[in-house]
Length: 137
Image 1 (cartoon, rainbow, N blue to C red):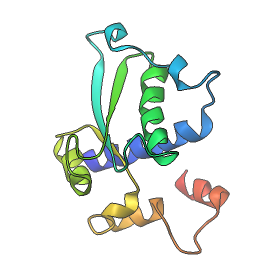
Image 2 (cartoon, one colour):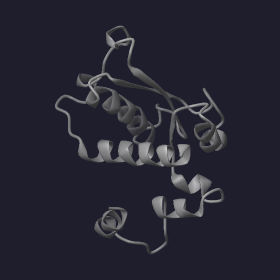
Image 3 (tube, helix red, strand yellow):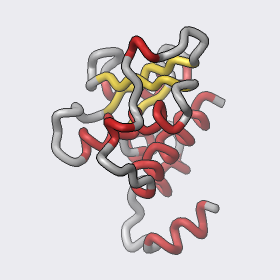
């Protein structure tokens, strides 16, 4: 079940980053730590690349900020750089065991653990974007 949650969070974050446009950038939808209610669900999210890495890393951090903002602060997702919580290649197992709540990385890292994840990373000569989304839905 945790594997499915991991996969859903990764896909949701990717979709949010890809399709949600926020005027003025993600900083408008984020909450400060002091503004987060105490009864909020708090998630620790780690990534495979640091937030300082242009494009890929910044998207991971932005995704967690969007999740927090779009949930109205009811779900507070905090992004941690690789290795801060668990080693990158142990992320999948850590999410499965409940040690961390979510991870952002290519699903291709864990094809050896779950062969179906290949369809969520790269399939040579695979479907284009429209075909992939039709298959997914």
